[in-house]
Length: 119
Ligand SMILES: [Zn+2]
Image (cartoon, rainbow, N blue to C red; front, side, top):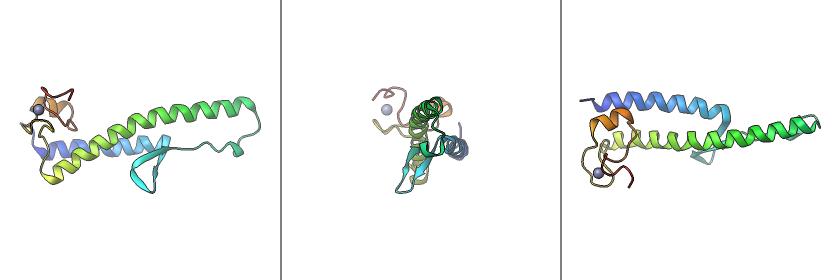
């Protein structure tokens, strides 16, 4: 059986990885640390080349999509670490029974047991 400290290590590693990925496409909202904002494109710094403007809008839209996925995972990992701190880690949020080890090993941020996976 994997110890909680091992999950903690894995989660912390993933969190810092996610944070560095998030930093490449966005920045943390100073008013809400759970919220990440895509890096705005400063259109003023671009030359009035229409293609360049279109490209940067496209990049912004791509970043927004990437950021959204990363942010979801970031907050999942973060709340798993909070559950470790609170001593509630590894319990299904539906039935409160321990989450199967093989599920936690595959995803330490899992919040439900295999039975309640779609709840
Ligand atoms: Zn359950």
